[in-house]
Image (tube, rainbow, N blue to C red; front, side, top):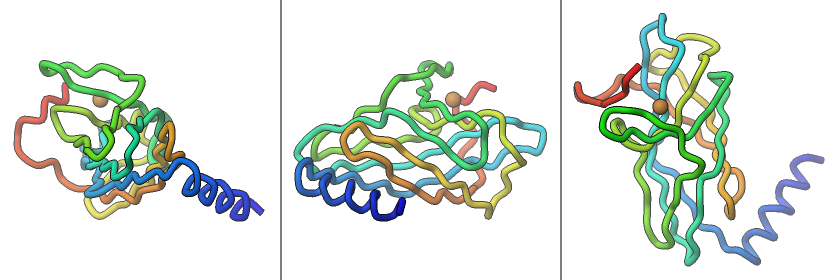
Length: 143
Ligand SMILES: [Cu+2]
């Protein structure tokens, strides 16, 4: 039943709004077992003619999911992440990210996290994000 409703929503979306959001290279940072937080990164491409916004997210690895950005080494919450028409936005260490707060279990390299991204126009998009070790030393994630 749920599948039927979902495909109906997808179809009407295609006909009327033509959302063209693509999520690439999603990954979640491996954290030490003592850490209760991690972050998810990815590239979001908008191939449509209308700007869209990431307005919310959830995931199966943590209790709380927030949209964050890092500015001058400090993180702050943002209400939405804009994805310009015909453009892309990169969520990366030291910049925009999806914060995973209160991890249900430690995240180890090789694990997979299922993220649900909610866009203002494109609706919900599910992404499988592998857990990887952080790249580079300086990521400006001040926990
Ligand atoms: Cu953060």
